[in-house]
Image (spheres, rainbow, N blue to C red):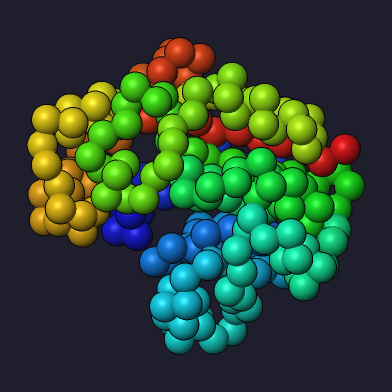
Length: 222
């Protein structure tokens, strides 16, 4: 998704009112969202993959990147409890076996009143071959994510996101994909980002309560 610039900006626009000055990004993947964030006083990027951390440090030696498992209880002490006022976690929880512990850890890394910004794939019924090759363990309904989020804080915002993307994801159940880097997948991403996204963004205003490709959630630590 690093080439989907318009899509990435759309995701971050949804979270913009809740960003503070000290952000931990959990799961940087191939690029991370730093370039799309509001000005930051302090930023740390986290991922469990050695290769992705090495790549990020090479590309942005001015930033801090750490290799950690977000579901590892000892991670909190290493990074520092209450260290951040914002944690950004986009398309990560669906990969984590113990998503309850991951949420608890992220909550402990937030200062009081800090915001946890969550973005996950929506609807178990949309689980397709793309989820399997992407390493997804699950997809979430709003009520699933709300139940988990309320364990760690107050849910301020909860909605589905990207309705046309959800339809496209469902249609992909009829196509076999060897991996997410396959040419046909990359072509779909580019087509959506350039031509389809404006329509989905407009439709999102009326479908966010009932349907979307993803669920977007903002949680405030008490």
